[in-house]
Image: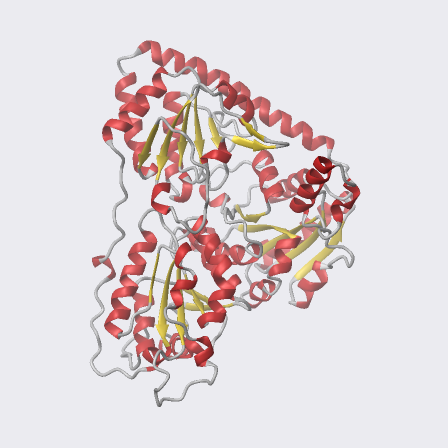
Length: 587
């Protein structure tokens, strides 16, 4: 709120709430149902706190908030225009739900009283629902549609509290248009935000945490699988300390920055061998335990030693819905509801106490640790050799793209803010992710159209300011939300977008090949309905149309380095966006 200004309308109060709770940005695509709120942000709040992030589609707006939450650890607001906007945004809200991202989506509905005399756009009846939140209720933590200004105040506080209470996630608030436009008589009191802090997460049953540590100490080949431990930025330190104390190999699913990928106890990439040998698996914040232990080939290949015991620690039981996430039920020997950030610290202390009087266990851990370190190095060496074999591939191989970029980045701070699955996998193989701000990529929800919006949100966050924010952008994903490039240009976001352009919905192409082989049908038909060519999209020309520096398409690997170098200079020195369209191998 500007100094000395008093709220005159209901929408002014909502802006005061945004300011009090520290929201820096509000991503939106304009809509008449929240015209009053838009006016208040601009003319009452001065477009300062929050500042509007104008997007050309609600799916982009919500993805911006999602990317911001991942990078900063703080919630961000996205605003959706009544029913049509919410339906556009629904996929992005689902992505945020699966990713446990704390965002607050504000919606609006036409006047709930259709007999009212006050003027409002004639489409309002078509865009009004009772209750609007039912559209997304199965994949938000909470939704609410208040019918009074005091209800607006209280629901905002509750929404903030719920979004940030573990397991975090999106919430949806819907404000009646007339409520926003209502002139204030008596101004409702705004309670301080500190009166409604997020609730403390469960720490886990102390006896069961001790039992977990004891089981690890008596196991011959225990293994840690980490899913979303790193959703709280500092939890990785507890994970590293716990793994080091007990000499535990770590299989990292890469959904968050859980552990530095260069740490000698990480064995990602050798899951099959590691799980075959395991006699105990401890799964920490693993979203889908069945697929963490299974691979899909001609059949479901179960990787885990059938004699192995399984302990699961996390908050996933709190996120069960009848509507979605139909996951297989996995037999576990022990299941503990706990915030891993707290449980890891507690188990670390238990381990130290038990090991202090158990010399035999300490020696066993030392021997196991040495063996894991050797295996870690073997894995890294294998990836390096595989990358070298693909160096001259034409079109450009993903390993070459990543190694050239890594060399050009040098010691300058950087962050990977988005990547498709193949590029993300190769980045974790070939780059060194040493701290959380280097890895803010990921979309467990899998909905296409996520990448450009999430990249914008991450690049807006304070923790990443001054870094080179890198978007390894799949072509099919960007075609969903091309207008995100307009927002990048409009805000002059220093984002380096590198197209990993294989001109195909290649994941589905692989499915088609697999099915053709199984059914003894022509494999060459696997491209039909999946290849995005012809015509071949010229992403460089599209970006130039949005006034973004762009080069490409680059297919010859010998031309790659120069293009990357010039684009990187634009981002690093001019602090402006740049795009390089690279035609890549699919895997």
